[in-house]
Length: 233
Image (cartoon, rainbow, N blue to C red; front, side, top):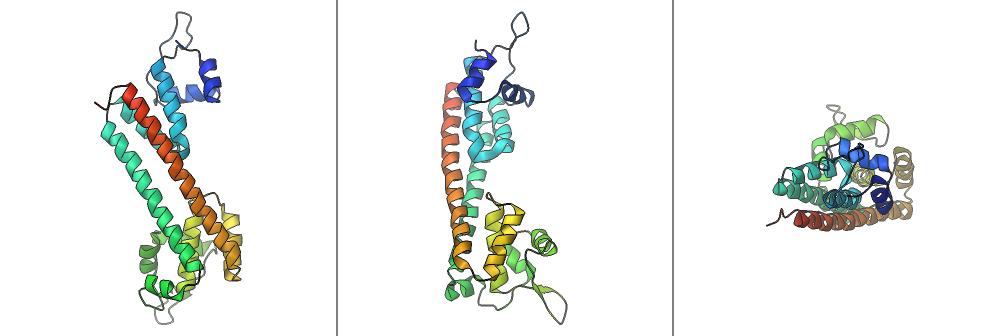
């Protein structure tokens, strides 16, 4: 049996964090001693180590789902959650690569992405950038972007510059940048300070690469825990 304080020191977290994990139901029930103290087993330590290892790459919401599925022995459900998160991260990275390509002011690439059109509808931009139309309208409302309007019907229309801005915002929103930081970088983009903007996009790419490595580390810890629990046989 292990004391909470010893596990907390080993994992460099607080004992209250251990209690939170217990309250959330993401570790098995914890037995108590005769005097009411928690007594953690090797199995609990395995869960704690897995949670801490998976947290940087998958985030607590997904980690909660994964840990609950492990306890229910729904291993494939847990694996599919991880697979989806890795697939989503890969898509985010592709979008960021597209953004960097556009920031290189490659006219051919931009024309290809636009489908040889001068203007795009909000639906077409949404499809290319993988951004909901509601998000695009929100970014317009808070003045991150300023699309043009069709003089005949009043509908929004977007050119290459607008698409570049939307891809750029999308790339930054998924990383470490807050709204004010994004707004400042959009100003740099409008002022054609491409090198500053390009660096931010590359920083986003580095961020996604680090998360990808964190996910691999988390998957490895998941394997260790499931193997210890004999759930992979």
